[in-house]
Structure formats: C-alpha cells, structure tokens
Image 1 (cartoon, rainbow, N blue to C red):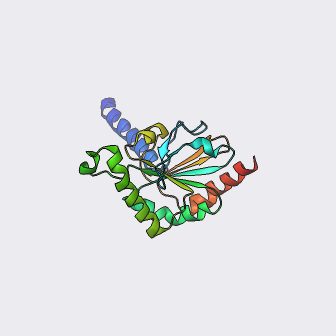
Image 2 (image 1 turned 45 degrees about the horizontal axis):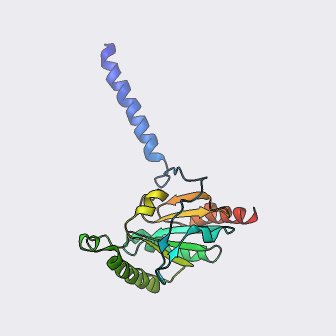
Image 3 (image 1 turned 60 degrees about the vertical axis):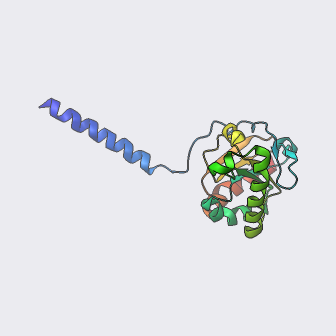
Length: 189
C-alpha cells in the first residue's frame, strides 16, 4: 500500500513547484550583470554611423533602452520611454533591426542603411526620446549585455554600473515604483 502513495506524493510536490513557478513575476529574469560595469562596446550611431561607446556617459545616470521597429511591445512601452527621457538621458539600443533571411545575407555595410531607414521612420512616426541611437544588427553586443529580447531597459549609475534591468515592456507602475525612484537615488549619490 505504501508504494501506491509515493507516486501521489511526488506528483503533489511537482504540482506545488509548478504552481509556485507560475505565480512568480514573468518579467523577472535575474541578470548576472546587475551590479557590474556595462561591457565595453562600440556601435554605429543612427545619425552619422560614427561609433558610440558607453564611456561618454561616465559621470551621468542614464538608461539603455533596447528596441526595434518590428517590436510591438516596444510601441506599447514608448510613452513610458518618452516620459523617462524627460528626466534622464536614454540611449536607444536598436537590436537586430533587420531579421529577414534576405537581409541577413547582405554584407553588414549594406544592412546598415536599411536598418537606419527603418529606425528613422519609426522614430519619426512615434517621436524620438533618445539622445543617441546605436545599432546592434547582428546581436553580438546584445549577447554581452545578456539581452533576452526586446524591449529591455537598463538603469546605469554614474560609474556605468548596471543597477537595474527590466525584461519586457515598461509600464506606468514599473516606471513610478521602481525606475524613477532608483534614478533619483542614483543622481543624489
């Protein structure tokens, strides 16, 4: 009779674990980079294709917002990014802008003008909140940053240390309860 209860007990434990996992915040994915300096990178800027690096932001609290013109949640969070940009500099990190197989076969120098056109159209249509926009067409810097997808938002302190990472779109609640208070605190330190 004891052997009959063992599978039932194990099934009950499995159900409890699954239930607990489903109740957790879906957008919370721990990042090993929180508390560490942002990886050094150099990416082309939207305006002139000159290289941009995070070193220029030393001494400032700033936000890195990962987006793409094909990203529907990016469009939904855009009003939050516009609001945020009025209080802190926001870098637009355009991630994997051109993902069709035909575009990926093109050399990188031929992809950049297409990506620039798509990004500029999107920013013109929805308003540009970014002090700069950089392109990561292949996603190589995104791998270093631990980007899971778009949108994502990083809060960086004056020493370029990542202090917070939001996976998924920003909401008014996340902005008001988490990001803006953190930005205010980091500005004072």
